[in-house]
Each structure stands twice: as structure tokens, then as C-alpha cells.
Length: 432
Image (tube, rainbow, N blue to C red; front, side):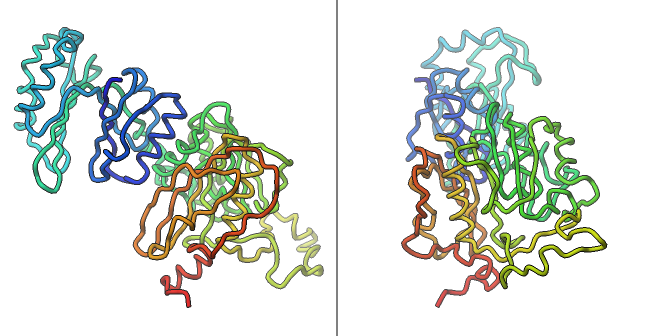
């Protein structure tokens, strides 16, 4: 199959291949590559795809891919590149009279304008006779000098056949939103999670810890119908965020024109949810509260039920019917939050549906066994975002078979994220 160069954004390196694989399945584009050839410190990966059209389709909604380039040549010197390009001269004829442009880039070094002009002139042997157009050219050719720690370049050359959707990061920038809160997920990761969930037209996506609704927006942008819930309705209504009095989540739905695809939001405890029995959602995408910016709560009272408080009247109105009512809650330990989330996904996802969520871990204690398991959920991806003494991991799981038992899965040992909130504020002192 023809070779192509994937040009990644040089950040979130642990997330790039999982997104590529998710898009390959979503777009039904066969992609072949050797995972051993992936270098985290490099923005380039050579893959094989059947055609330029399929390559463009693969990356059209990518967040961590800048562009994909039809491979024409590479080498340590320009002479090596020229030699490889000249072996495929029949390819030149396709663009001999087309309007064209050259994009010259460098990774690990800056090139002056004079250096870029010299690079372009070095490809004059292609003898293109069409007009040069910096906008809307029929063919765009890409040259990049990649420098590693040895300071010796590797040069890449090819024709750009498709670009990703990194412009969406600016469009969904949280600083531009009418409503946000202290737990609002940044735009880039919210969009990435929508891709990991393979959100698209015809899907029904649920966020059980919806907060200010970032995932409702991004999944709806890609065509899915979404719904969210939270135990704290103040975040949903906009009475507890950074920007209050703007109608909460609804303000953002209108801003991004996705009201028709966000079905609704509701206030309830996800561990005691009112959903009908059986599979319902095509994906669950969420950021569970793990205590760094907001502590996890579930419905209940620390001291147990107090009947004398349950029907209390405030100014003649039952307490639970007041618009600012917040139900009594008790702390919700992190390992139980994740355990219940997996049980929810096992029951409510359709077969083939995905659970995409963040898992906090202690850097010095994490092992792969800390990622919870469930008999009907298969681990697809585990990508780390480090923060020094702790990390959060984007976990992607897929339901592989129907749920035929409600038997709890008991871990063999306490995971590193147990009591994560307490450990975070105690600076992760070793557990005695």
C-alpha cells in the first residue's frame, strides 16, 4: 500500500496513537504501521493506507494530527531525498501544470526565510509549470527538517493530502465560553475524548458527572445526541460556576448551536440512577470527581437518614422542592466511584460501545493492575497525562459482550487511587 507521513502535534504524546487507532475504526480506514517505529520525541510516523482519499478521511476530525502527507522521500541529506524522489518521476506529471505551493517547516530548529527559499529552489528539478498560489493551491508540497538531540536532521518530503481539525481547539476554547466552572475540561482533551468515544451521527452519549457540560458540547459537535447528569444541579443551572447568571449549560449549547443534539440534563446520583434496565448508550464519556478541584459525593448522610429533616418546610415550601435545593450527600471514595462507573458502563452500554474516563493515579505507586477491570469491558487505551507526583490517565474501554451477571468485580488489592483526595492533600505520603 502507498506510504503516508502522519504529522502529529508535538504534545500529549501518549495519546496520539490511541486517537489514530480510534479514527481508523471510526472512519473504517485501514491503517498499517509498526508501533515500534513510533518515537514520542518525533512528530512523524510513516503509515500505509490504500489511497490519498482514505488518508484524508482518516485525519479530517483528528485533534492531535496536524496533517497527513503522501510520502515522496526522506533522508539525512537533501541529496538522499532528491534521489528517492527521482525514482518516482511518473508522479510528477500529475502536478506539472497544477497550481501549487511549498510549505517548509523545521522541528527542533528555526529556519530563516532565506533558508526556506533555498530549500524550495532545491526542488526545481520537479519542473512544475503551474502558477504558485499561497491560497487554495491545487497541490501543496511539504518539506520538514527534523532535528533530534544529535542535531543531525532527517528531511521529509511529500504532498499534503489532508489536515486535522486542530482549529476546533480554538473554537471550543474554554476562555471563549459563556459559562464555565472550576472543573471544566480544556477544549483539546474534550475533543480528543469525543474521538476516543467515536462520537458520530446516530450515537447516544452519556456523561454521568456532567458538571459544566464540556463533553456534551464536543460529542454533539461530531453529531452524537448527548445527555448528562450530576448530583449537583447548581453546576448544570449555572449557579455555582465562574460565570453565573448566564443560564448555565444552556448558554453554551446556544453558543455552539448544538441545542438540538443535547437531549437534556438531569440532577441525580449516578450510582442510584433512574435509567431503565438494559443497554441504552453508545458511549459514556466522563471525568469523575477525584478531589483535586471537586470532591466526590453521593446521596446520603454521613450519620445516616434523619427523618425529621427529610420533609422540612422552608418559608412554606418543602425543602426538596426549592430551586436552590442541594440533596444531602456523603463522601464518595474514589475507588468506589470508579467501581460504580464500570458497573454502570457494563449495564448501560450497547455491545461495541465505549467508556472513556479519567483515572487519577499516584506516580510512584501506579501499576497496570490499578486500572479496574470488568468481564464485559475490554481495555482499548491507557494514556497518561503526568502532573509530577500524580497523573491522570485517559482510559478507553469497549463493551465486548452482553452483561449476564451483576456479580461485583472485587480487586485483588487496593488500587493506588484509593482515598486519592486525602492522599493528594497529604502530598502522597507513603501509606503505612
